[in-house]
Image (cartoon, rainbow, N blue to C red; front, side, top):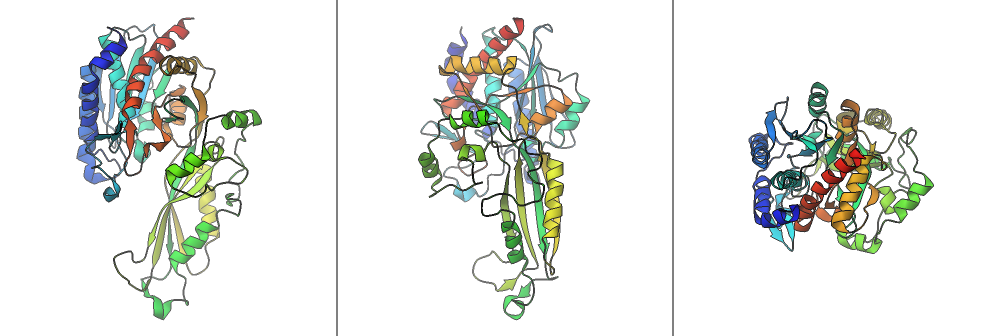
Length: 456
């Protein structure tokens, strides 16, 4: 039986099994869901075992377990290490979902659920592709799985695990599906990712909340001060004003910028999809460049004072914000975090105290487009989509790509099947049924081409 025939004959089951995982609220950021995170790991391990993997175990860490499994068909053949994650972002605010976030619902060919695209749907494609290759006797390479449960909270234990298990994780390439394509009829492969520095800031004024009539205008209001400080971090050209922020930025060549400009992109459609009147960003760069090759600074959350129903005339004691900075080669997260902290402390006016708490970070990464693995991924996508994929730069961060290169000395291929419109991290996250099955169809082709190219 061909791989396509096997996929088609098991289509309903492949969806139902994905739905099983999507129903488990494996929210790693909230300890209230710790039991669900572990339950998801256990169910995933069972699926891997059933698919035909050997030595399937839950590798315990200081946090949530890593699901490991392997199939070594011939030690002389190349080995592919598949990475993914089974944890998901919080679903709140739940009232903004049109369907329950942990009850997968298919509407207009899209699976709506938290984790549908990021990353359960994309990760599970590899499990089902592996099953397909096993059942059709077409597995062309050795395969190892390393699926973690802490990606959405910084993967703090993954580096330790990799460092302690280098021989076990040894592979010729790491294959990840946690990125997006340009469109369902325009396949693409990310060859670069931005890094991340994530911090929380606290501004404290008076020792307690005060009556805004009695004290307003006489003492510093931490919310007002925080807003002023944040606003000052961009100039009129949306250029980040932190001294030294751009010193290590690896500027993109004109030829690479020209290649990015050739990517199909409809600005009006982009604005319409987001329901915005216009885009905003660093002057002198296109929208695609702003989200792929330029660093950013954005407020992810801000709060303080009274936010309940009705009015309470209070001058707050404290104000807070969470801030993320996306980084590009050759910036490093530790250096940028330090620059931010020094600058934030330096611009605080008298009358308030500030505190900066780093959360997590990750390094930017570039993957070679002339490697055997990238060529195999391109050939696989051309075979299933009917056209060559376009190399692109991803705007998001997958810090473990740089970590893998450091600890395992192995390059990564980012062969994602999501879309930017899939609303990952947002209410109503979804993943196309087409994309799910196209991934299951394409992954075996990657193994085939990777084995063939390694034999040449």
